Image (tube, rainbow, N blue to C red; front, side):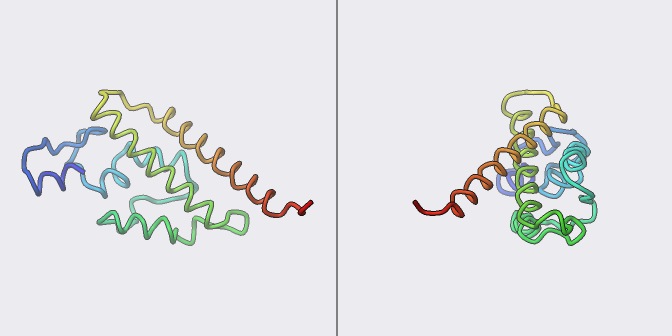
Length: 138
């Protein structure tokens, strides 16, 4: 992120490319930016980004591998929540890079549709793999 680059080189504009409000940090990029919050809201169920204690990329990985208990139910397995969270983080990172490097305008709806498409594709692959794994040998 730009805040880390500025700590090392102090040559970058620190305003965040998606919302322009504050310095780009990991926490703001993925959790408090209004655009990131909109993507989370559209993509996940009851995930409260403002209540997450994330200070590093390691914290993001821990959060994804052990999602908050309120995000899973008897119908939703934790692997699905972790996978969805991974696609959301990747989608937000993609939005940021498109804005910085390609000058693209942010389209939250398009980003959410892209994330949902990737989740569906992933689940289809998992289902196919499970069927192949459980198929009787001939």
